[in-house]
Amino acid sequence: MGRRGTTRRQKTWRRSIPAVVDDNGVVSDAGVLDGDVSIHHGIYCATCRVPATSVKAQPAREGRGPVAAYFRIKRGGDRHAVGCEYDFDRQVKLIVAEAGADVITKESGRYRLHLPLMGEPERCDDGSSVGSDLHEVEWQVLSAAARIQQLLNGYQRHPEAAEEFVAEYKGRMIGWGDFCWDVTMPGRAHELVNELRRPDWRQDWHPMAVWSWNTGDVTGDDGGSFRLTLTRAYEEGAVARLRSGDAGVFHNLDPAHRCVMGYGQWETHPVVDGRRPQLVLRVGHASAVTSWPIDVWPPRAWIHRLSALPSEPPRAAEV
Image (cartoon, rainbow, N blue to C red; front, side, top):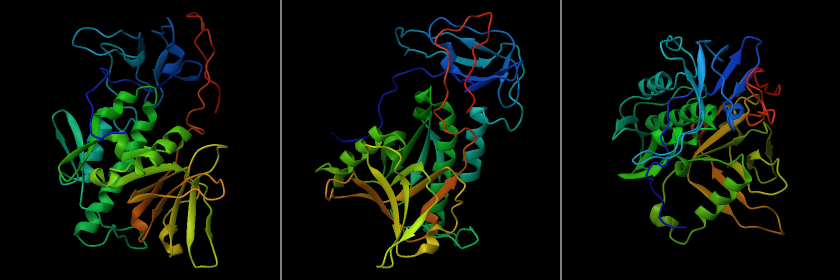
């Protein structure tokens, strides 16, 4: 694998509504629009119920990338209600306002998350950050990364949404997927293992935010070491673990939260006795990790009818 950085945008992304609800209360995402299916009446934003319609997929044209099928607000309709989680631009503005201009700026049409020189952030036991120094900034970076990822999780069928964001470390631009790794998928976990094992990785090194499913169980060993295994649900794939000599670093994590993110210097452990490779973050302070809930579980459990008649709204399986 070669040197990592931002890439040229491959698709044109139109602001979309990730999920809609119909008059019968059935919730669907854009997966129901596969093929020639269109829905123009009786559907609404699933969170604020502004009237919505569908837009068919469009092939690439000269000077423009392809556009995947999506839902949007009807022309002439209202805007999303204040606070709607599917109002992408407003949600981004809230994230930027909370993080501050030192953490996120918008440059060349993209939101840039500024990563400070690596050092572990610190946080008090009550969750508040410590002082107004570098450690506080690093905790703000982790919090902003988690909020951005939560927003993007609603746009899994539109991965081009992630191209709105980049990370910056020592003046180098890093694509969002190369900074914030979703290792809930075994393929991505293996890709991160290979990335960290590249011979020239030290030349490209930067802090990473890695997130996965939370097992909720902190375990210890006889040597006084504690660990939280983030994902182990697959027969194949790497295992991600947070390790620390202090069990207190995990006290601020809610065991009921489905997702956990760790920020810092991730490394790999050698494969021993045929076991799966391990992605490891050594955590010195509670502020290096954060967690968040998820409303729909599992998040990729949308199951749609293979063929949907326009006269009968497509149904999504209950999850």
